[in-house]
Length: 239
Ligand SMILES: [Zn+2]
Image (cartoon, rainbow, N blue to C red; front, top):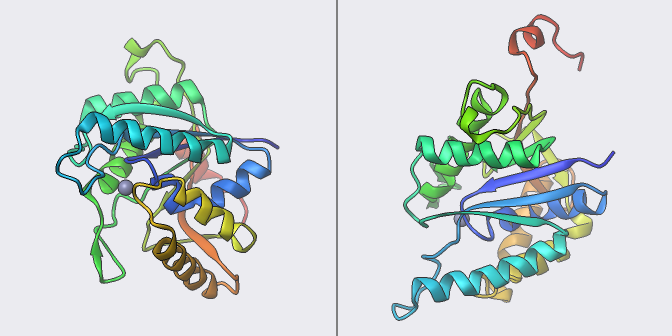
């Protein structure tokens, strides 16, 4: 059955790098994907002479090319890159997008990830994107009493997948789409030179897969939500 999948992430390229293989697999299975970009990645340049407008224009073209490979729609919230905060305004914007798109599954960042691999600090925008999205998902998006001014029906998202996580419980085998994932990431030409990108993402996918006997994989922490938390706890689904 075709599902609606919504990614809620901070920057152009976040969906592709975190979950490109999974999204390609789902898209080819018939799922309809919407990429919600909280920022336009306007700090994504090393050139001090670049203007904000030039960076946004360049990255928008790259994002459209990547989205075309996924057959995905792109929704932009236009927040400033590098300055995300988990505000009520951001929560409301994410609630609006979720109520409009009405996804079966939302993919965002694990907001608890501060560090990765003992070698780098997670970008604060990634943590905050996950933080704001999780706070939008519960309880706001499903309760009519939150943000009634939006004039949109509440919505229950059945599944939440969190990427860049240290607590994975779901592994997607991306062996057959790994090369396509690298092509997808490399659509973001200004950010990802092909050779190191290919090496880095191949290595990471192979390492993630090795733990599960897969040639290459992406890993996620998952939640299954229901309309009534107390009913779900009273009658847990059989495993
Ligand atoms: Zn990012």
